[in-house]
Length: 362
Image (cartoon, rainbow, N blue to C red; front, side):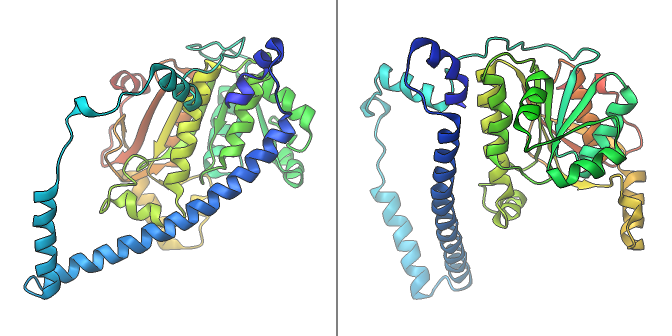
């Protein structure tokens, strides 16, 4: 993001820069190296966790055993030998070093020339919806078509463009391999939404953010769909911790959230991150041949009408795809959720607040 956002300034000031193709190649190589380190680190962390659990279980079951005695003695010794250094003795980082670290972290990036924060969409603006084939994406498209105020665009694999156009003729479906058409669509977009129900690759987000850095951009708002538990994934014993063990989905969502916040700050555009619980219902729910699953969905739809929205990531639960799509749509149209991260859950109750009340509580 730093390279892309500062590209035009670097050209003006005569700094040497690399081509985007070379940068993408370097990024791909770095990702492969990082993925290798990450896999090895995850395997080591899992091994250490399992050993620690066995160790604790043995101590709890046999406190008088030699292993339990060693553990008690070790804990006492560590308490006796532990020392704390006063804060005054800590080495102070130089201002120059601190500034360079902040720049590297993305806290001082050059703003795109036409970034327009804190603006709502106008009638006729273009919205790019990524992940439009997923159920939430289709729910969002249906709601946007009912509004009938905005141009809807999406980028798809070549083999999906034809079937999608047949089903949604009013949506501008673009072959993602056609670079010029994709570039034009992204440069004209007033809002970009990522509705993938599984975490997308960070390169996809970099690609979407990068077009706003290469020159004139109409981008005002970026909305990302994420998951509850992102901030609790490192707490052992938490539900989010165990969810994250397989697939590392919450790690990926955390990377996307961090990258979006840095990129939005760099481009001076608004962002909104919407965290959902376990996704339920959807456009194809009642076509499920499993009658028991359909009955459970009908019961969920009847009972869980109360919508809970919170800035705190402290709860787990279920979220209706329709309500998640509503939250995305309202976040596009209103200024209140700008630059906020909030979670949305369905709870027991038949009464539900209006979106005016929900966002005023935020």
